[in-house]
Amino acid sequence: MKTIYIVFDKLHSNEAGGLVSAYASLMQLLKNDYTIKVVSIINSNVTRHEMFSGCEIINVSKHDFFPKMEVISDSLKHFKLFSLIKELFKLVCYFCYIPIARTKMIKMFSSDDIIIVSSPAAGMFMSSKNRFILEIHTKFEYFWGTNKLGRLQSKLMSKPYITVFRTKADMEKASKYFNSTYSYNFIDKEIFNDAVSIGEEKRKNKIIYMGRFGKEKNLPKMIECAKLLKQQIQDFTLDMYGTGVLVDDIARLIKENELTENVHLCGFCNDKNIFDNYSLLWLTSDFEGMSMTIIEAKAKGVPTISTNWGDGVYEVIHDQEDGFIEDTIENFVNKTAELMNNREMLINISKNALNNFDQFTKENAYKRWIQLLKEFEGELE
Image (tube, rainbow, N blue to C red; front, side):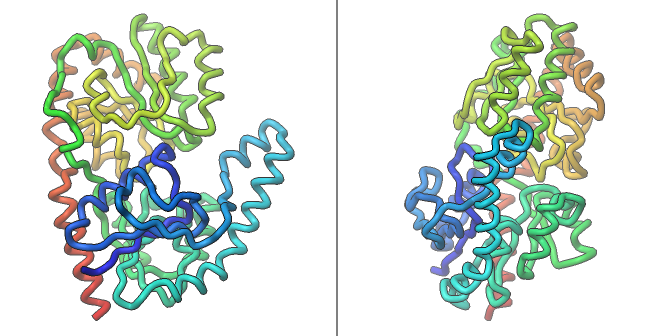
C-alpha cells in the first residue's frame, strides 16, 4: 500500500478552522487505499491528533516559531509592543527556515511517495526535487492577487505537479497560468443523525454562525446585521460558534450595540447536528474558498444568507433557490426578516438546501480523488 504524506506548515488543533476537519475527512475517504501520514514543518507539539486517529504525525522542526498574523495586527492596533516583537521574531524564523526545511524534505520522501501540500504556505518549504499536489482552500486571489503575504508565499513556493482548488471558478482562473483542477469540499453524512427538523418550532427565528473568529470572516458586519435585524424581529437569536483572536472584540461589539439578549458567543462546537436547532446560517466573509459550514448546514436543511465572498459562492449557494447572496447589509437583513415572517417560503428554501446537498457527498469526492491520485501515480512511473 502506497503512502500519502499530507504536509502542513504547522498542524493546528481542530478548533483552528475547517482545514483540519477537511483533511480528517480526506483521510477517512482514502484510508482503505493508502497509508496516510501527516507532516508538520513547524513543530506542532503533538505526535497524535484527535482528528487523525491512528495517523503518524511527523514534526520536522524541533521548535514552534509559527507567526500569527492576526496577533501582529492586533498588537499594532492596541500598541502591544512585547507581543509585536515576539511575533515578528517568529516571522523572521519562519522564512529563514525555508532552506533548512527544503534540505530535509529531499531526504524525507522517496520517489514513490504521494505528497499533498495543504497550501502555498506549506509549499514554500518543499524542495523543487519533491513532486507534490498542492491544495488551495481559499479563493484564487488570496495567493495570486493583491494579498501581499499570499503573493509572497506563492512566489517562494516550489512548482507543484498540479494545483487543486475548491471551486470550478478558481480552477478556471488558475488554468490560464498553471496546471490545475478542482475538488469540492465534501461531507460524510454518517456524521449526522437521521433527523431533519425543517419547519419545527425549535428553529423559529434562530440563526447560527459557525467558524473561526478571524478577520476574513468580517464578523463586525455580522453584528451590524444583527443590530438592524432587531429593529424588525425583536425575538431573534444569533448563536455564534467558534474561537479565534477576535472573540473579545466581538463580545465588546455585542455589548456596545445592546445585543446581549439576542447574540450569544457559544464557543467551539464539533457537533454538526447542532444545525437542527436553527432556521438560517449567516456568513459575512470577505473571502472564502468553499465554505464547509454551508455544506454542513445544507445536510440538515439549513439555508444560508451570505455575502458575495468570491465567484465560488455561486457553486455552493444557488441564489434565490437554496440560499441567498446579498451585497449590502440592508438586503442581507431584509431577506432574513422576510424569511422569518414567511414560514412557507422558509420551508421551501430549506427543503431545496437539503435536496442540493448531494453534489458534496463523499462518494463524489472519492471518485475525483482516486482519479487524481492514479494520474499522479502514473506520472511517477
